[in-house]
Image 1: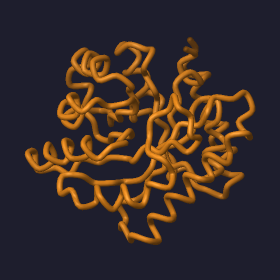
Image 2 (image 1 turned 90 degrees about the vertical axis):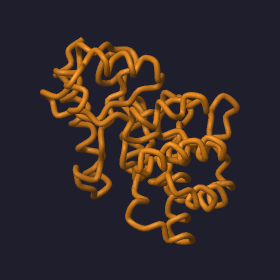
Image 3 (image 1 turned 180 degrees about the horizontal axis):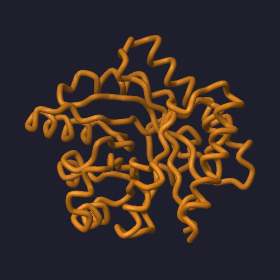
Image 4 (image 1 turned 45 degrees about the vertical axis):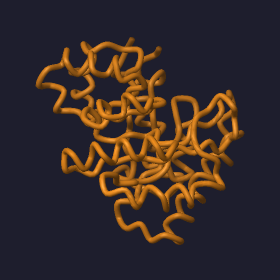
Length: 229
């Protein structure tokens, strides 16, 4: 694994996508998805300016955080996998942003934890834009009502939307998915006036992040393009 070469290649592709969209580098967060790498790689990530970490499984993330010790505080931790309600408390305590809020009962549990620790838990609403049965997330036509419900919860901070596009060799075929999520994001902004905390669009992975950036992504989740696995 030539981490430096991979990261430079990813950054160059990101720069081209940002330029094509007339956007600035500070508008985008690169999330290094570390699902298939162990804690020994993390120090090198800091060398290349990657401080935002995405993990799919709570148990794996806990193991890596414990292995890192104090070094774990150098990173911001994002939970990007499906979250079971019985693991919500642990996730809320260990992660800086949860990308996968997709049901009200999970929102209520997270909010209670937020109230207990006196910190509003930052979350993104996961939307199943493509309608795939294998994907988690609420339906696009439920986004407004769902947002209206969770904004009432005092221990949550709804910060935006997340989606997973279908895997395809041609990223242009999923451009409509990203465009639809951006539309839904702007619709919530216009109808509910959520304020400056409503700012994140988490969309785009290793095979399609350039298209996602062109369509307005503020967070891209990149694993294999960085780590080669």
